[in-house]
Length: 125
Length: 390
Image (tube, rainbow over all chains, first blue to last red; front, side, top):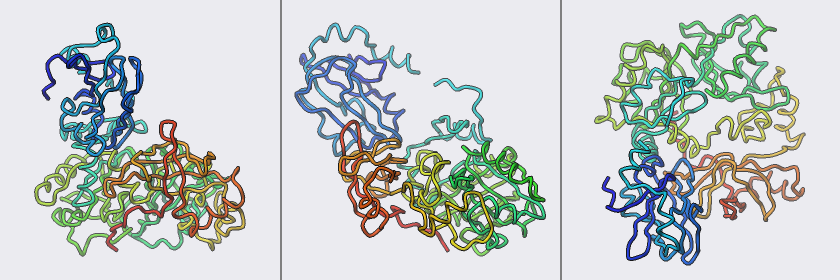
């Protein structure tokens, strides 16, 4: 699995990537592997505001529902509409299948505790 | 994940790892929850064949002059009608009519094993069932032997199962018929071969001494390219049984629910003469002389949301019960489940409607998913047409 350069990962298995001063958020390949077949994704409404570590989405696999936490605080600018009808895209490539794009409110401070991908991989494996 | 030593492993543990299984704790055992993926495994079982390690299940031998009298006293079914070489789906009930377990009883008097009746029980209940059964046995000339540690068990399910069994030495005309059991040589190994399962598909369950587990597992999987058989984990076992409308102990069945309340009334005879534990309430409910206190219903979600075990169920915004099992159905492409609706606080009118299938089928209920209510429709079980070969 090719994780894009520059992503930062949370202990709760979300990744965040800074892009044009906004933040793209998704779920790591390790987390997706643990979940198995993703069958449903519940995404927030555009314009809603979440603090860091707040639940912003739910991903359902065949077996269970998993809550997804904000790696950084911010306002939701965009959600990945493709996932509503094709949740399996997350299994195919969890880095292409981002969940939401946010306007972060405190990116520098919020990312202090996050890990670079290689460190994250070491931590989970 | 750190795996603690206290979990039991089946004799196929290493084989599961070789097949890429993700192992999870299940009722004291480390079992494969999936190999390649639940949906793939589910579909393979529906379309060709799936192989399940079900060695965690319990096996009990019952032997003695009063075997029949004994069994008659512990299950609501009439075991006297069970012919040699045949199986009967039964429940173990308590004095209050609640369900201690559900089980399959095989009459094996015609088969050369150390038993008159062979019983398969749930893994989660072996430690409850065996002491209970032994305690109930003191009044009878009968011996109860827990064989769970000596025997392994495989389930081979799906339309291609019969061809695989044929290739392993038991041709089609010598295979047991639906809900029958035979002692046969399978790949040269002496096994009990039954035409039963937990998927709604035609298929077999195979019981044998632990030491043959590797040989039989690998032999069956060697037909992968010929008959498209794949190993299947507990994840797909759950979606398969749910689609087939089959209950799971601890979810649809427990010590508080009677067979009638858990929608097993079909399996309860109205005319069994012998006394059994909980007969008064079970029979009265069967004959509609006593009301059900609750009832199990099957439902299909109308929204994309998935109802899960434990989610609250509402009718007209009033809480009425809980989801006992829920999952996406790979076959139907919809989200399905069972729920237990408690009648105690409901209006008489609503209970009457729920008790009348003509009114209850199609009724809209709501399931609370993450603090929001979503519609679901009560429906008939099974969710799919069973494809047993009878």
